[in-house]
Amino acid sequence: MIVDANPGPYSFDPATTALVIIDMQRDFCEPEGFGETLGNDVSLLRSVIPPLQQVLATARALGMTVIHTREGHAPDLSDCPPAKLNRGNPSLRIGDPGPKGRILIRGEYGHDIIDELAPLPGEPVVDKPGKGSFHGTGFGDLLREKGISSLVVAGVTTEVCVHTTVREANDRGYECLVLSDCTGSYFPEFHRVALEMIAAQGGIFGWVAPSSALLAALE
Ligand code: TIU
Image (cartoon, rainbow, N blue to C red; front, side, top):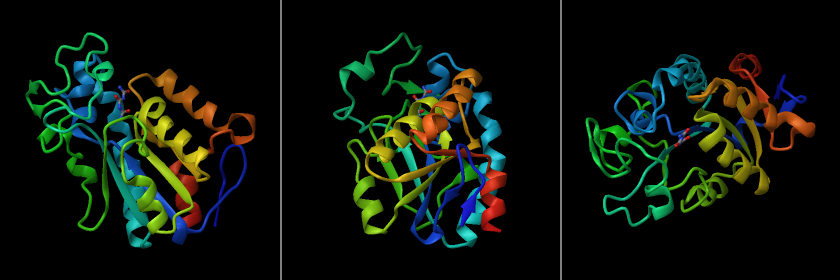
């Protein structure tokens, strides 16, 4: 199948392609979570939800591999480097008790994926301590086990966890298509430029297309 993408056609086989949904967690997408404690307006991320719901429904209907990720840490913070814990001047730090549970801690309500995009039983959920999906996780092994060679990437935030994952994946030989309307940032300018960076220089990190182009290829 071929998607009309930037910088050129993105060809993929749905049987060897995974839809990877990055960190659509309450802590990033809803008030009173980690994103808001960093000073961000989380409402900016919510425009991603409706188009991503449509892509997810289509991928599921076609039997494509769907993988979700969550950024977060063990309750004892043993996997959170001090450099991450102490960065900036947030109102609440990782691990502090917030209105949605301890900030960015596995098992807490705020750490989990939003109801609108809840994983189905059997869909892998990769818990990651960093921004990229490969660092400190079983994500690479999971892709190899499933015979995946291409990734369709969605989620938040474009310039942070989406970008880091795409860069990690590109270096490992995966062909990545990033969905422009299914990724989002607290900084609209960063979103725009982050997408440009992926497709620049002949697709230095991958391809970019709106979800409508992917759906046109799949339907
Ligand atoms: N998931 C993800 O992107 N984590 C972040 O911390 N993003 C920010 O933009 N802060």
